[in-house]
Image (cartoon, rainbow, N blue to C red; front, top):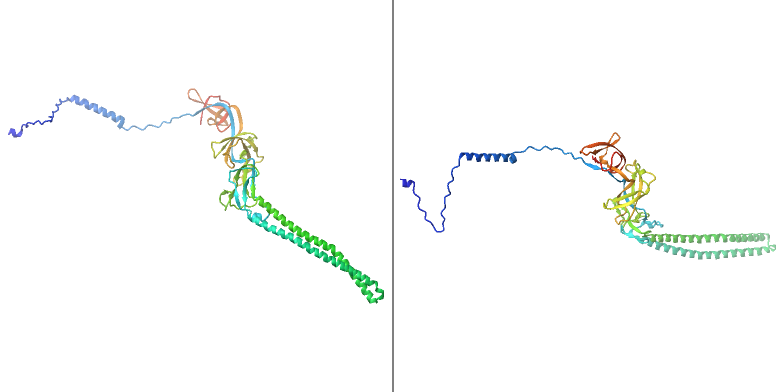
Length: 442
């Protein structure tokens, strides 16, 4: 029975190349004290991990940090400027309009066939625009035919008057012969009866009356004939002058430049829409603005200043000019014209009065063209050397100015100061501060 219950292991046969596994050595049993020490170390490590990484930390309180911004009092040149906004324009320019027609028929058809490009440089005498003259040329041809007919009428009337004059002279000669015949017949009245003598007398008187009447008609007829020829001559002259007016209009249809410069086309409104530049095919009327020739070497800034600031401006004050379209462009200039009277707006803010001012731009820049929005900082006051404090450090209390001056320990001392002129950044300090001191901003 014992052999069946606990059978003895069968012997293992070794195969070639097979390693016999070796049983690991048995570990000696650990003592209870060592086990407790290991458990204590593990629990301590877990507590540390929980405190440092696992346990939620209380939210940190936001403690405001106050940083005082400061600036130093400086000494140097001081300038006070006033900004003037406006647009660029040319001081030397020539306005070119559609020609004013001398013939009333010329202005009815004025179609623009050609116009020079906007911004082009032109010379004096160069063609700027061409207006269609076909209708006027046809009308001139009709007038020339009318003049030829008027000259023919003068020749014809002179021939007719010559015939009339010969007829009148013949009538006068006949009347003279009748008078002579009646006079000779009347000389033989002694041999005639009383009735015959009376008839001869009446015939003689009648012939003399007809002769006198014929004599009176000669100067009157001469005046009439001269008047008729003069009327025909005036009619011909009227047609000639009519033709000359249209011929001058045809010449004016070719618009030329009167000076050297740059072309700026005028703006027109078609059908109530937005303004557009004059272009080929437009219908013009006499005197309509067509373009402007400007001298790019004589540009200026046209602006307005409030009447309360107008007293600060003087002729010759320097200015620094900038263009809104080209932020990097800076040009120098000077004030050369100030309006004598303040003017108001037409529609809005009509009660606000502004004084016109013109600032000449020195130098030439190819980007400088008319009608650009621009600004000019005009120097209205300047000092070669002044002590300046930033405006952000100045505080007003009861009509007095104060600043907070930084002390060596990091504290700030409230100090009263006396200020003079100011610009956009600094104020001139007359007393209370010295160069290099730090003042608190804001």
